[in-house]
Image 1 (cartoon, one colour):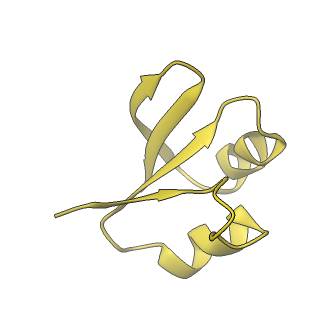
Image 2: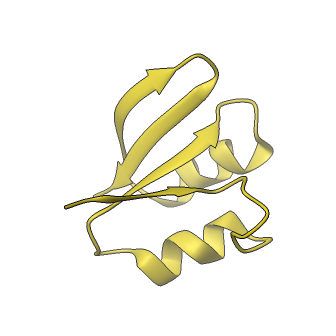
Length: 63
């Protein structure tokens, strides 16, 4: 079963890109606001596969 990691949660690392790098290759769904400055950096660095959108939140996996 997939896990969902909210990259903007307080319990998450202060660096979402570092978190993704650590979990890359695992069956994880990430959540982040599309207004987050990290979202654009993540899209530039990784192959993002969007799973769904709920309001301003984007759920995605890294291919």
